[in-house]
Length: 132
Length: 64
Figure 1 (tube, rainbow over the protein chains, first blue to last red):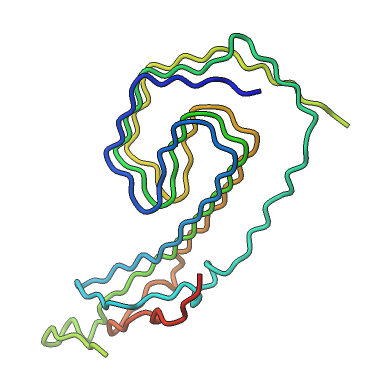
Figure 2: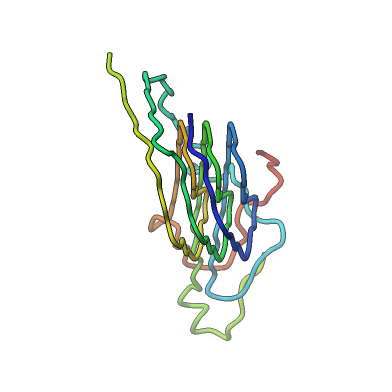
């Protein structure tokens, strides 16, 4: 038995990249977000680069513990959750704002950061960059 | 064998104000039976690449 959630007003300015604003109860949520974040010293980006399978961080298996049913006795005392106002500037990358009860949620996030710096000899040269 | 007793009472909150929820985060206003979250973040020193700006491994692989 779960409580009733009452929210008087909700304002979410941006929802992006498979994020979710859920109003109401839900059973199973299974979310995943993967990102390769590249920062280069110069603004230089190629169209079709980036392959998740090239990096171990996207291949590691996650071993979630088994959900074993614990004998659970839930008592409700005038049970309700009341929130007057919710203000969120942004939801991004498979994140969730959930108003209402949920049975089971499983979320996963994997991020690979890469920073590419200009080599010293190029810096001292005429400022041209090597592009394959 | 153990059992768990949870007593859910009344909950009153005035205002929730947040800048952002990102990377598979969950903001839950309600009850849940089971929540499992996992996060990988890889930014080792090897991810600094000094040298010519070569493209990363190309898409092509078509996995996932």
